[in-house]
Image (tube, rainbow over all chains, first blue to last red):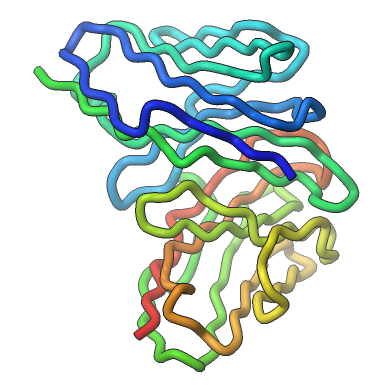
Length: 115
Length: 114
């Protein structure tokens, strides 16, 4: 099955700096890669996603890049703010008759943005 | 508000008991997926229901079972509870059984097994 590795597990940056979180996946058939933000005690919220036919996608301060050949994708947050502090999860997905539409999550990155 | 609602929000059960968790999907979504999130971990896929049929299953034993109803709401049942079943159980709804649409997660049910 799909295996998603996420690094780093913790990341501390100063307000205004950039933060980068990296993920690798094992199954070359995976074709959908969402990123979720989860604040303490709250539900995961989709912040950006990318499909395998696209190499990069940007939404204001957040961008995601995908390298299908190397099977890795990254989340970039620019001009970080204290409210960006949360746990971020990457995920990879491949639809199949056996697993339906199952997201395989990384273990998460705890991002702390200090003022 | 997300539109995906789960009940109850918190639950404490004794080892060996059975539990039923409930989820109402977002309006217009016909697919419901269940995930288990242990403390400090990413969510793990349990199974998915599409049009009242199980549409995929993760690496969970048969004592984890589910249902989807005609209104697309869903239940997760866990029999013979074990201490390791303590976790946040997340329900997510989406459109289309095998298409790659974004999930909307509910707030989860925090299950504690003692």
